[in-house]
Length: 184
Image 1 (cartoon, helix red, strand yellow):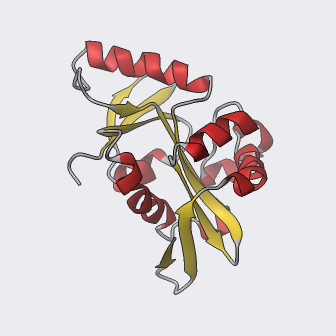
Image 2 (cartoon, rainbow, N blue to C red; image 1 turned 120 degrees about the vertical axis):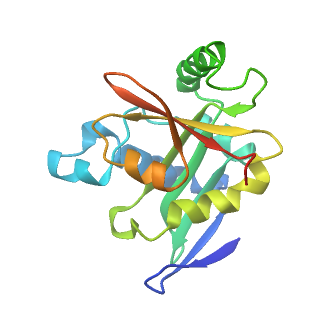
């Protein structure tokens, strides 16, 4: 576990997710899925996906590919690297296309799907960066890059870029982003 102090002097604990966190993570995941948000709240970002199943989350947790952020023992954010759910297959095919087009190295080890969520009241405090820094020792032995698809309507693509994610492709619906773990 790592304690992180925000620029507003709030203490946030960052740690690996455990199976005891499953219910809280699922609740947070469902809360941020686009279909459950009203238009006004989409400005703070959203997820365009199916909710994670308990089995998906258990596999990700057991692989040590997820960090959580806690305030007073309450989960206020998560950083998931999904290489297990059925959705990761869609991402895997997109990554394969980028490799065929030499946008991603043929031999690069890529985590198929990264998803980041932080509760509204705790956004803009550097929590995603702290969670990623915490996760790097667990991810670097397995992956060279992290991959994420961000829907064009989601304003958080700018936050991704500020955090070091590179937009490697764009189409009419999505930005395709890559984070380079090798350079760190």
